[in-house]
Length: 109
Length: 114
Image (cartoon, rainbow over all chains, first blue to last red; front, side, top):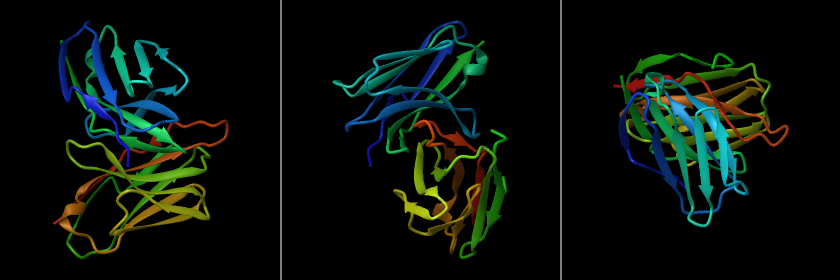
């Protein structure tokens, strides 16, 4: 099944800095979603971007989608210690999700 | 998310035992899903159900079975547990009303098969 591939696998930044992670995929999608997972807990939905959208914002999050390049990026601005987590992109078709392996973000105080 | 609960939260079992993981939701969603997560990997879909009478296999259904007892309850069974089924298991729900695609996850069940 299709999966997204996140890059980088891990990211360490200083509090207050921005964090950017990317997701590439190979097939067509209905929408692409980003989720956050704190240390072994359940995933939390962050943001959804539809295939006909190019950019979406939610608070300190900015997501872009380039369907011609089959890629998406998630930007977290002004990072905080609480942003330390794993972030997953999920490709969506027909209400099913396919997850990538995730990017682990560590925000240092 | 307290709206999606999973029991048990942790379970250690022996090879060959049958085990059931349970999921309940109070969100009123029609769709429910079971995933497993292995260390360093993303989630993989085991089974999904679009309503009580609709059950579908995901990408890794071998060795698993499910039961949708009611709209709010979706159980996952391991017929004869084996060590490589040691993983973190998540239940999730979604709501097709209004074409909403986001999923809501339970806290997970950590299963160890010895």
